[in-house]
Length: 111
Length: 119
Image (cartoon, chains in turn yellow, cyan):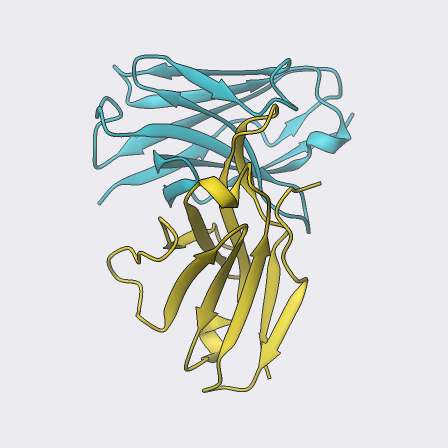
């Protein structure tokens, strides 16, 4: 199982805000950058956030990332029906089992 | 823009070796700035990083899969490949390739290819 824990699901009405947490430890989130990915149904994941809070070109500023200690958070404001997707956090884990790791994933539902 | 495309058999028998290739277009795999990675996703489950390779051939693998994984690169064809040996049903998944800018930063991704392990 993943070393990064996310809530299985979050939901909100259109126009509202949701936040998704990603909980880890000092061997991963605590000492490494965090990325976030959006996976729309039936498609490949897409990079939303890198280096904790940076957005690639073309990603709207409705998406934001932050990190504090051993946890990271993805925020989505002005929720749209097109935001309904699975979201994953990712980081490097420098423990004995070193490597890239992903979170358990969170399903965002727009009510 | 940069595009990646996975290719290979969609059905592999148990105990055999899964082989996939990722073809990169719109850019050179020999760029010194990037690694190139493989990630998989079992049906209905989350993402699992398999391993990554630099154009020089330097690799690093997921420790849980390391004994069965080989990733190689062919710069002349602008491709990199994945081999996973001794497969079981647990290896059934959609396999993605992606460019890796830095640890945990994969962008862009290929569309993915479903590989089913079954006799």
